[in-house]
Length: 234
Image 1 (cartoon, one colour):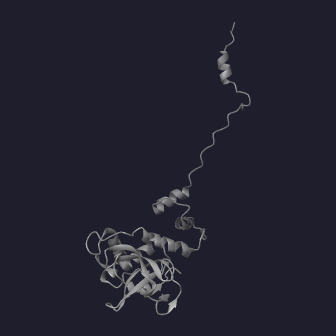
Image 2 (cartoon, helix red, strand yellow):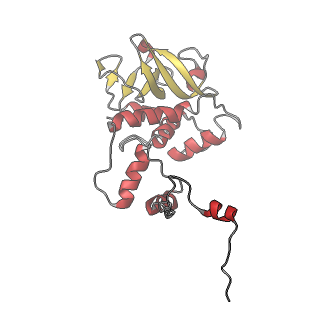
Image 3 (cartoon, helix red, strand yellow):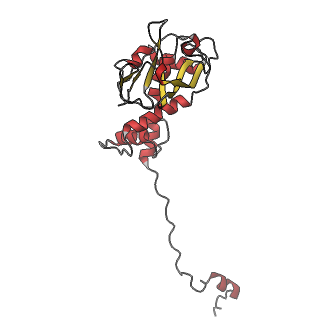
């Protein structure tokens, strides 16, 4: 004779579904598979894809072979801010390894192909433009007059109102030419705020330390002191 298998009442209650509970357990939902394009982006460019970055979106579009990458804002406005941000990050950097020398200053002068220890006001412009992803056509030059050739504004004739990230030139009578350059941060009615390499924050206008100073600084210059400006973005 076979005896029936008996289970404790507590076991049956614990295993039974409660009021309103489903009798079937739903299957587990698998996590979404990682996007292979983000992994490929990191492998190619050495950085994590940032969907909020215009440059990253353009790189991703090129990687995928798309012909129309998204552009949420006009290119010039993004480039100008990127150029200025590159310069703002360097404000306060000084010459730490002798005249016209520091690790970052040396990197600027390597970019423009001049010997270490060379004046670097124009190399500073070039560094900011490269870091900011500026459009082609700007001069990768350590010669300050190159940055205002075919000027779009001059003190003598006026012209297009200077915009942020435009390059400006300061004329030095002792040199008989534009001998210092930098970038416009803001342009007002009587003065402009600038970002400059190879200058000193307290140098008097036209002094030797105004064009051969101790580092990278933000300055305020009178409009009448600026010789010429060139818009390289538009």
